[in-house]
Structures are given as C-alpha cells and as structure tokens.
Length: 165
Image 1 (cartoon, helix red, strand yellow):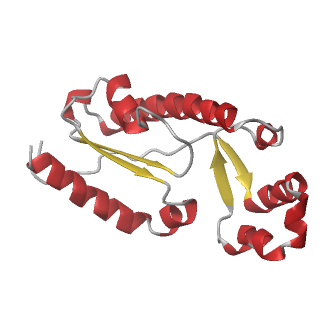
Image 2 (cartoon, helix red, strand yellow):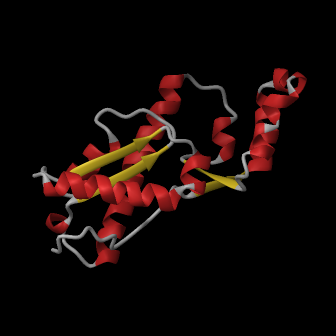
C-alpha cells in the first residue's frame, strides 16, 4: 500500500430509477394538498435532478405504509446493495478486503443501526481498524453537484484517519 490514499474503485446503486417529473406527479397524486401549494411542487423541477435512484420500484411507494415498514425495506435493500456493490468494488479494484483502509458510504435517506458502513465492514470481512466515513442526509443534489469536492473531502478525512492509527 502507498502512503497516499488512492481511489481504486467507485460503484453506485440502487437498481431502481424514476424520473424527477414522474416522481413529482406521484407526489402530487399522493398528497393532493400540494396542488394548492405550488411552491412545494416546484422543488421537483428546480432541483436540477433528472432522475433518482430508489430502493424499491416507484409503485411500491404509492401504497400507504408506516415509517417502520418503509425504513425496514430501506435497511434490507441498503444492506443487500452495500454488500453487493462493496464486493463488486473490491473485485474491480483488484484488491483483497484486508487491503482496504477506508470505506465511504453515501446515503441520503433511511436510518440504520448499526450504520451501513459498519454493516459493510462486517459483511465484506474488512479489518475492524478500517476508517469508516458515513455520509448521511447530504441530499441528492449536493452529492450530485458537488461529488468532486465530496471525493476530495473523503480522501482528506480517510488519509487523516488512516495515518493517525
């Protein structure tokens, strides 16, 4: 391993996608009072996001569910996806799990305890000394627009974590 952090692999998910216009239409149908508050619906057009990645197909969200049900589906899919994409990233990078010194997990929704980065560390058999950088609730637009700055920040944080051990 080198002293300088190196990004050897980058993978993204989840598998379901929906267009921002379609999501806005679904939101208006599900929450009819939004029609009277045009400024709330404008966020779908003003966010400059073309599509969103979803844990479940868009139709799934149209059925009324409790927060617990929705979050349980999120945790199940997020853990599955983290393990699948993490294994893919390791293969793509051509390294072994013990070679990884830092894990960055970016998530804009859902609540998981243990955190997704902690789950991923265990699921992939990474060292318990791996630096974990969970980025939660930053918002899709921030992540989409500022990912180069986000990547630089992650490298700086993981470098500090990894060199201070």
